[in-house]
Amino acid sequence: MKIVMIGTGYVGLVTGTCFAESGNQVTCVDVDLDKIERLKRGDIPIYEPGLVELVVRNSHAGRLKFTTSAADVVPAAKCVFLAVGTPQRDDGSADLRIMWSALESIAPHLSNEAVVVIKSTVPVGTNSEAARRLRELTGRDVDVASNPEFLKEGCAIEDFTKPDRVVVGVNRPEVAAVLHELYKPFLRTEHPFLVMNLESAEMTKYVANCLLATKISFINEMANICERVGADINHVRKGIGHDQRIGFAFLFPGVGYGGSCFPKDVRALVSVAERNGIAPRILQSVDDVNEAQKEVLFQKLSAHFQGDLKGRTVAIWGLAFKPRTDDIREAPALVLIDRLLDAGAKVQVHDPVATENVQRLYGTRIAYYPSPYDALSGADVLAIVTEWNEFRNPDFNLIRQKLGSPVIFDGRNLFDPAKMRQLGFKYSGIGLETNPQSL
Ligand SMILES: NC(=O)c1ccc[n+]([C@@H]2O[C@H](COP(=O)([O-])OP(=O)(O)OC[C@H]3O[C@@H](n4cnc5c(N)ncnc54)[C@H](O)[C@@H]3O)[C@@H](O)[C@H]2O)c1
Image 1 (cartoon, rainbow, N blue to C red):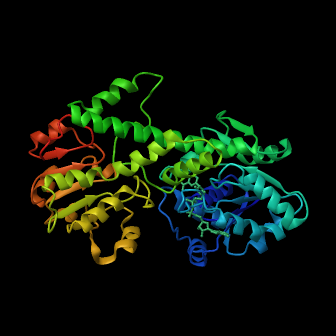
Image 2: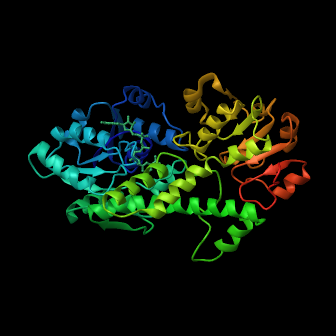
Image 3: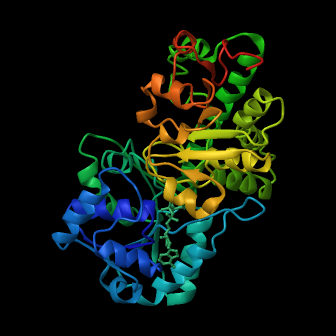
């Protein structure tokens, strides 16, 4: 099938590449000329495990192409996917300006058989509005389908090629049949292809992200209570997780969720609810708890230094909003860096892949280290923000040697507190019984 992907970011590039890998002819379009030139050279602008090999292989096979010109490639396409960003407006609602401009750029070039598939996360009603705008722009009815994406950065290829389910929203069963054809190679293990109306598909994506965000905020709030009352969230977590109605997934306490999806999607659904006369009390709390949780590490550090961080040096391990990605959008590490700089502290950071993106934001205001241990030289304490695998079994002797004092604030509960005590560290995690009150 001939496919055009409008928007070649995390979602568009992964989706387009995986469709090419299953034999389709795919052209990825982006307005960012530099990005397209890099992709043509096999230089991948994002970090996503396994993606380089797939892009290079499919480009060489002639199944995957890149261009800035929608006009050149849309006329021959059966499916035109829209995978452009849908960022947040100041009032929390989704900003659809990029989406509408992308729609305008394809409308004059669509063939009569083309299906426009909205893969971006968009508020309920957007697909119907897209159909209305396309009718206005083309003078005929154009098939529109909603096909929200559930991939996770860091496991994007695995998620896309082995999806738990594929959700499509359509107005006509014939459109679902086109998409089923496309997704069939990824559904061989009987994972469901769920067909529903446009509104239900749009809502499914928000409900999924909001529930996952809710689990994170819930366990963070429980961890904060545990810490105050002498309970240990790790024991509590196990105590509840074995209950099959509850389970373990997404119930790890930490420093709050970040990334390009959960924060904006929770706020966008708040906005949709309010516009429809519903007070979204749970969703609003999820967001509020998360914003507060991003401050927790700084508060612990500040308490440790009796409220005076001026002239102190803090080493930070982990900048990306989660491991296996270089994405730093809404990353908790950025909140910590801002607070530390405001308080007059010096900041030395290490991340396996996200350093360049952070450097673009902070320039020379903080120091960057390719080695986690070098980031500790001259630092008073270590704060761990992202749970990269390589931080799970570090050389504790080297950490002790390099740090001014053996103090670790762990925002991801990577280590066993008893072992840390034995090793001579003052160790503070999130919601742990052993968190020293006066660390
Ligand atoms: N990143 C994720 O993990 C993820 C997962 C599921 C769903 N989503 C959703 O998918 C959508 C895209 O997210 P993303 O992270 O891939 O965004 P992104 O910002 O990484 O990529 C969007 C791309 O679209 C390009 N673009 C903008 N206007 C364009 C136009 N008119 N024509 C062609 N290209 C244009 C931009 O240059 C950019 O490269 C969002 O709605 C997001 O919420 C993201």
